[in-house]
Image 1 (cartoon, helix red, strand yellow):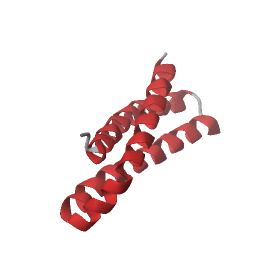
Image 2 (tube, rainbow, N blue to C red; image 1 turned 135 degrees about the vertical axis):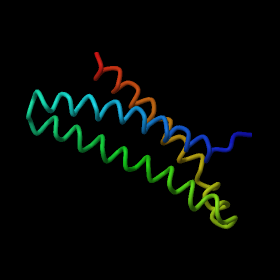
Image 3 (spheres, one colour; image 1 turned 180 degrees about the vertical axis):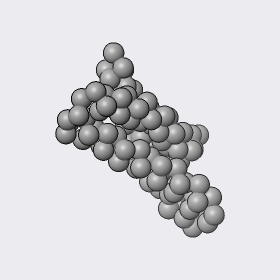
Image 4 (cartoon, rainbow, N blue to C red; image 1 turned 120 degrees about the vertical axis):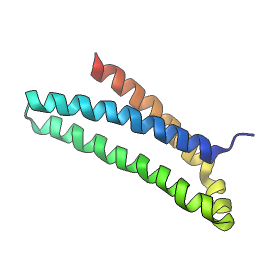
Length: 100
């Protein structure tokens, strides 16, 4: 049986790495092209990074400390896993396109 919460956190960590690559690339582009579009790309990628960091922090603090919270988190963990996997696929495509 897959522990969906651990898998969701692993996917979130992968997303953080992909977003780090994306943000770095966008900042390099922003130095060359000072437009609102590149600034917007940096801001959106940063917000997605914050979302993934919150997932990891949620898991490491709440999920590990209380069995009551663990039961509640397990009930929704498979949804979080699917959301993170879809985001990982999308970010992988975005990194691939951005780095070309």
